Amino acid sequence: MSRRCDAFSLVELLVVTVIIGILAALLLPGLAGAKERARRAVCNQNLRQIGLAWTLYATDNHDVLPPPQLPAGYWPMVLQPNYANAGVLLCPSDPSAAPSASAPPPTNADFAPRSYLINTFVDYYASLAGLASNTPSWNTNIWLLQMKLSSIVHPSATIAFGEKAANSSAYYVNIFQSPAFGCLADVAENRHCNLSGSPTGGGANFAMADGTIQYLPYGEATCPLNLWAVLDQWRLQEALCRPSAR
Image 1: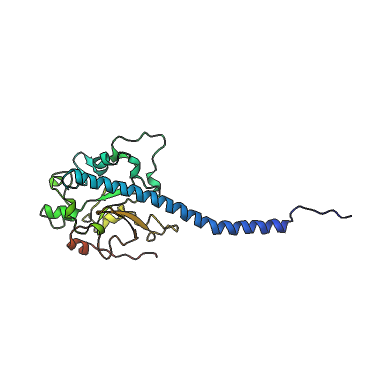
Image 2 (image 1 turned 45 degrees about the vertical axis):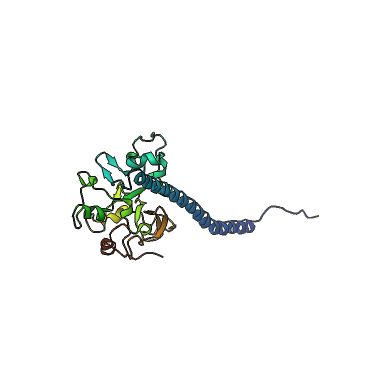
């Protein structure tokens, strides 16, 4: 009488291994995409809170916006009373901004890990100072000039905050920065929806001056208009269209 062998043969094991590999190849990109969508949602919410803190500052100061830099510090510190938790300065999709587990959180938000930068609205401040396209010196007397939130004539299409590039320490975007369009190196325009890591793919979240959060594909923050500018002249003159990976 023959005995039945219940063990798998080598061929059967190989077939099972191949099937598992195929299933993993099909499922892992979907899981990675789901994780990225979750990170992007948190980033979106944190950016919304920062935008709200900026709007509350204007509300408390007769519609006057905070300058990007005061003699005492930068916007994270200035807006800190309106968002309290410095964790909102972080986007989970930004690997460079992860706080150290051993380091205590700084009391001054200017020194906290940060994934975002503010728009200087430099074209508007320059016009207040009687300048053409020169960069005002933020740490001298330009901060005494007052820009009001109501001065932004295209609030739903003007960026207030954007995502900071991982290798940048910038606090703000200055469209008059030299060399021309050099400020864009400080902006993470490809952080989300870019599983391939293409330098010109994906897109980023932006807080607009009207309080909304918009996802803009790579390059659309400056084309066909530069949404970092306030005045129509500079929105057109400082526009920059670049090829993107779609």
